Length: 247
Image (cartoon, rainbow, N blue to C red):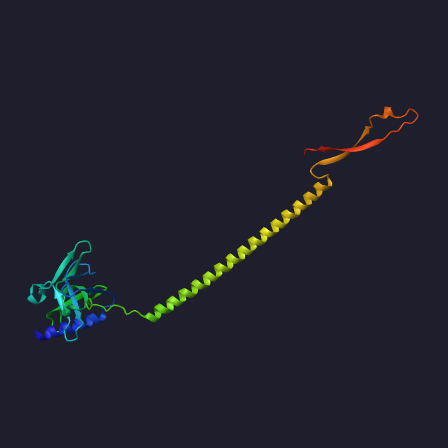
């Protein structure tokens, strides 16, 4: 009996070394429950699970439906999944002894004849492609991060430098814009003064304020009082103010 158990353990180790596939890690709190999902579709045979413990002192473990009734396996149970046609493994009250690599298989029992012609039982395992690593969550409270004042000062100096650069740029732009506006105002004022002077000069040549002086001929009164032999005529030139209204 002991010899067959040793052979079975050795066979399990060899089979574990041949398993290759995707490794999935599941972390659980100490004392919690976890379900390990199977990818071995069951049609015939017996579902089994293998555990290769993380503790080197613990031998590999085979979990089957036959040994689930034993007290040593009371924290394990098979859960049937109708949608996937698989048997998942439930591990209750997880402890450090449960940590390790888990994989599923379908056990098929065959009988073959040995050299003497006697029937010998042979267990054939059809393995899945998934390997699940069960580990515990680290419940040690993490220390708060220590603030580095030097980093804060460097960041503050960098931000201040950027602010000073932006302020200088804005002040330069505002000063340049103000200078351009003042220059444009002076140019406009000079242009308006020049146009006003030209308009006034043209207006002065036309008589100023629209006043034109015209000579008028007026016959002097009392010319009948002069002597008959001497006729004296005098022309008096007067100016009358005539205002012209703009058209």
